[in-house]
Image: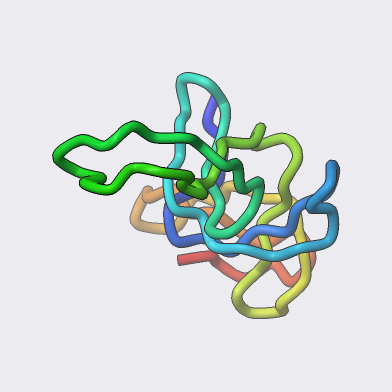
Length: 105
């Protein structure tokens, strides 16, 4: 089952402590059905000093959230929408907005 959400999409958070916020998708994890959204669901992780973090300390990072808890925001109409699939004349499948019926690039 495909998620319908891709990297660089804008999504609206529907549930949880971040409800109502919008953010850009950084990474999609299809095998877990989760996504990572920029500056949403931040956690504080305590890191020991190593090569990447020479000083160590507390680091804030985004935690994955379930894809079912977000809704895609249509770039054309700007509203949160469900995603439909349409087959073009060339035989290519495209994502479409269920509200304005426009193709989502």
